[in-house]
Image 1 (cartoon, rainbow over the protein chains, first blue to last red):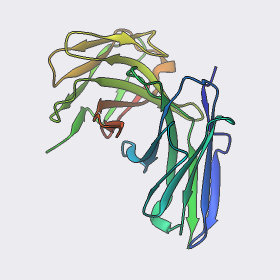
Image 2: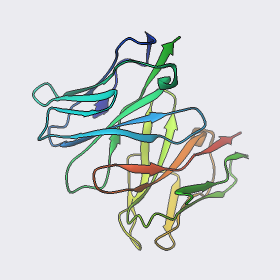
Image 3: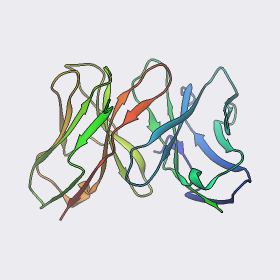
Image 4: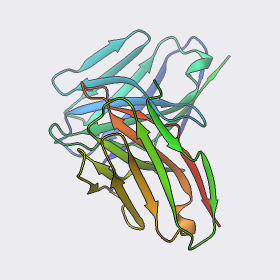
Length: 112
Length: 112
């Protein structure tokens, strides 16, 4: 039972355009969400987070949106750059617990 | 400042052999985690340790054991390796403050 789902295994975007990566979750108790970026042969690295008290969080070119009623979050990258090509994982947890549950990942390819 | 260090980086085992994957952190993390990454499955939690002296099962603990030797070290042991345990293994420590985990660079394990 996959509690965190990333339904698009891959995405290709032209350099300079917007990349939108999506993530759905089923557990309504989740109240903290993260996005990680992973390059080949490296561990995932933290990108951006959002808590359930917000519906948007921005950090430079990266913005995460949270729609609690739809149990959906998305990561927007504007403008996309070739160096953004990586696998992106969303993750979720419930406050007071130790475990993040990860999605299956979306491979983003930004074309020059 | 190495962060989270995993050894070895690569390993090939024969079915039935045993081995221990080592993980050490120098970031004073209380909580540490072992994940495995498989194609199409994302990152799945094997075991975690909320604090020194405690360990708990994650989503996929069968076939594994862990030891939280001290605050710095959290090892993962395969007593009798099986081909289904072929995977990339990541150790992580909880940064706290809403920044999720710091991951090691991974151990690529092949069981033949």
